[in-house]
Length: 250
Length: 324
Ligand SMILES: Cc1cc2nc3c(=O)[nH]c(=O)nc-3n(C[C@H](O)[C@H](O)[C@H](O)COP(=O)(O)OP(=O)(O)OC[C@H]3O[C@@H](n4cnc5c(N)ncnc54)[C@H](O)[C@@H]3O)c2cc1C
Ligand SMILES: Nc1ncnc2c1ncn2[C@@H]1O[C@H](COP(=O)(O)O)[C@@H](O)[C@H]1O
Image (cartoon, helix red, strand yellow):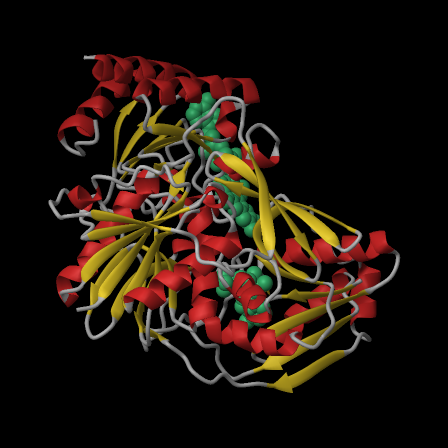
């Protein structure tokens, strides 16, 4: 099985965001960057499928600046065989532009399966994987929490409001990974040592048309200062009162 | 005059509440551009699409076909792209539900247009301007979409349904020939007891590790029941990871992002990843015995106290109000 996993470098979830002076970007100094959490599930699934098949290759692919090499190395340490960085100076705000770059890279790669995270926790679009599937003209299932692959076919389960959708498809296919798909492994020391020697190819890319322009980035409006309405059971009456008369939600 | 396309969602042949919100968002753009709002529904032929004029639809197309009963990605995307071509759309709006989040990128890739996901505010100034949370809600981006037929998915509960009086005339069409599906949804597994999804509820009561044991979620369920039909149970990741509750109920960065009218956090400390999922709630109430818990920093109202005493009393009082 030849499996591609598309991965993104994102600010760690604990990060407090500061907006830069241009009003359109975040201050990167002091921020810890990590592998996008959903891409960890995608990578783990690829490694598990390869291990189950007993043969194959797992390739990590990122679009980003040189700093994404570190993120690719993380996946090599987890067990990916090699990495590809599609390098660019700064990222487009148009997810379709990113999807097109990835689709161009993936099109003739002869992959059996192409895995993505469900969502990148920075841009929060939940789109790139599904777009790539469409651009390549192959089946795609998004936000998958259970996946079975056998004999060139797959069954995926995805959570929907109040239920679980069961979807069948044929390979090659795109899957985007949700939480719950698996428990991602931590890179072991041996993996980290080996990762240093694995191939990481870097190629420059650029995007053509962009139809999404970022006008501004702001911190969310601060919530008006709240207050403690009471202590223990005695507070319940006061709470009911403010919910009724002040917040008007009862 | 162009068209703002509102893609409405049905389940079992009945329109979902969020569909009226999509119509409201579509109207908001149409008021600025002078366009008409055209609602499109994909579903079985018997889907009830009457009365949508009262929510702002100028006209309605039902693509009626038995094969559209469940969400079939390829058929839905194919049918929609046909509607778009037919209507010359200024914008295409969907709900940011499980269905909408899967469908939106498909039509964007097929049309080569622009996408804004999970939008909480809309404007128009020579192009769609969309406001959307990024970085797990820790920042708000304003983006401008250019080109033909930009696609916007709107977050549930972010736009209030309208009351309007338009024709809402319905045309039923067949699913186009030659639309192919590359995958097939064979089944939707539903839990034995149907519950309202946390992303769609207007009141959410979420429980965290403070409940101590999975059985104690009964307290949360009782409070939800006291609110009646429009409320749902939510959970912190700590209790989902512990296996007490299903992932479907998890609120936060790796769970659902919710914007209910009222969010009650019970025995939840208020970690940054949890807050990411619920900070856009209109009113936040926290019940926690630790007066320094971070949840109180973003709560509008708090009770410092033992949840095992406070929650049953609160359920009792809410039930009284709802029954009167
Ligand atoms: C990548 C990543 C993603 C994450 N995503 C999410 C996410 O989507 N959602 C999420 O929720 N978390 C998420 N987390 C986890 C998050 O960091 C916290 O660990 C989690 O939210 C804590 O859950 P909790 O508030 O239930 O538990 P705790 O932090 O243990 O808080 C329990 C609270 O209950 C109170 N309490 C105890 N007993 C009582 C009592 N008798 N009466 C009243 N109060 C009481 C305590 O004072 C305490 O404040 C994520 C973490 C990471 C690293
Ligand atoms: N710059 C990128 N490079 C590689 N993969 C990406 C990139 N951006 C997004 N992806 C993939 O697409 C998924 C969804 O991202 P998004 O649509 O931006 O939320 C991520 O989890 C990644 O798997």
